[in-house]
Image (cartoon, rainbow, N blue to C red):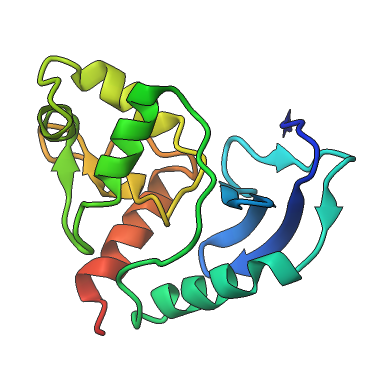
Length: 166
């Protein structure tokens, strides 16, 4: 398991319809949403406090999303990354529910049309899956490519959104 270490963090493990999710937050907001059944599970740091309370709203919104009743998340986030990563993650949040874009589309959107590979790398480093919807980014050829939770979960999320009713 990978280990993330930082003080003043809270965590909770939530059994979602796509597998166990590790929710992580600091005092500013949600800082991680990790697929524990995927290829890169995260081991909570010993300094983190296990508490459900900080995640009540996140869990409620995730439940709404998986029930097909919520299309846009309104959760306080605490994203940490480079300026470039943050610009990519902001762009991801503007991909409409049920839609997909490719890496070059995101690169153009952030004003750096030749940065498709860098966008792919930033997409892969997204610490808050689902809520920062990196699953909506596909290959230029229209095929599903890379996902931290694994391609079956990416496909399941896209299928949920294609048939979701709000």
